[in-house]
Image (cartoon, rainbow, N blue to C red; front, side, top):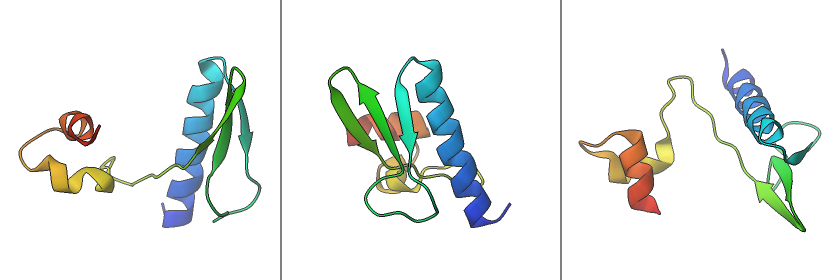
Length: 79
């Protein structure tokens, strides 16, 4: 898969998960739109969601926290 295909797959998967959880989801039309990829309606709030994907399942935003930890542990450290 090329980077565009990874991005489309990641956004589609994320939208699917939100929809399965019962949220209304809107997707921006077209690649590389500014600010956000999805809008998720949560009660009275509209949340802008930016999605990042990778071929290997890694999450680059956690690298500075990862060291000898799992991605889940690194994400918790970021919180």
